[in-house]
Length: 287
Length: 292
Image 1 (spheres, rainbow over the protein chains, first blue to last red):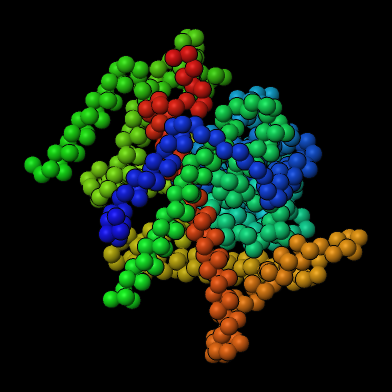
Image 2 (cartoon, each protein chain N blue to C red):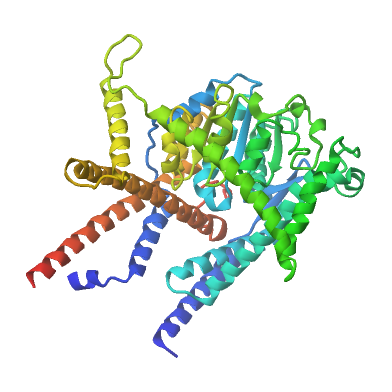
């Protein structure tokens, strides 16, 4: 056994990880979710807005991060619709406009059919230029966004009339998978205009350690990866979805069981690997 | 034939037979659509039974292709192979083409061509835009010229022309980033680190947890800074503080690793959800197939 473990083919670890994730999904295992201060802060920032307030949601990710960020993006849109906010969607990543449309279809068209495009929500789409886009729209939105994502002139969109830059937004939300994303929004929008702008964010796990230093002064709330998404989902569902929320509002919640089992496996593997390492070292010394 | 090849052949035949049987008996991987307010949207089997939705051949093919490409990518975990190479090549090609098209329609057409030739763009591509030229429209000829100069890299003799727009891009971004980092990270982080280790609430009573948090933050920052201070040899008291800094850094890397693991597991979970739900119909979390 000891010799077998010393020369274990790593493909057995891949197989065990596959089973650790697949079995909870197949058995529809459910684990309870408890909320933390960070997700509560995100929820409260949106909850404190008044109906009709303007909110900018920047989709700064692509389908590669849909697993982590998709559920929180859906919940952001859900809470904003329930609060009757004016939603301005935009994207710093080229594939993100399709994800915005997906959320519009899934949440707004399905559950809030009274909301009118151009009056209650608008998809401004993608512009290339990374942080350059932020730097421009913070002072002059119209020089870059002459149309929305459908090619309609911004002057013909009622909710864009009078909006010259994004300093008038009551809150910014960045759903971020990396560069450009939350970090750039903090650097080029929130920090220089800290007296006018507030921002909360949802980010991938990989990005989270980079963003923690900005809490709480530059970033009052942060949803970290799928755990943050599940917590925020619970807060929004508890307030707005009643006792049995629709399955589309429980995506992050469903993904917590595979997380639990896979993390237990990871912890077991790390402990096992260390035990094996020390045994090998002791064996080397005794020779 | 090698034993391994024989084993894989049997696995492929068994898996193929299972898929064929499931596709013929229950129609796994089938997708249905319905039209709501002029938009085609995904429908459930119940909608099809009710007669309001219909089978979508293109979406069904899309689901099967997506599933097989997912398996092709997973196959790399066993060993590099032609299926993985094919999936990788398709991904790179599709991504490059997508970037090009998006950049053309979302940036070049409305932000450059429309500003130089507004009437033409309005007539040809975007009827919602104004046909009038802005007062300073000719300024847009500068980015047009720089863009054309950048393309000269493609020519073997005109490469030197691309150096100027590249210098412009590098200079602009260097300036932008310098200001951004200095304000948000350097000054902002110094400001955020100035904390009282004796935290008091508005009624002047002592807050123990907050005080401990502030102390750890301050101490962690200082010991990490000492570790990166190389003008003094890391010996004696300075060495001990620097070693504590390494511990703090290690804890940070550990937290980063933990978050990365969480992210990767979530990615695996969504792919398996897709395979088990949309393709194989083994689970039904969205209640799409109620009534089957």
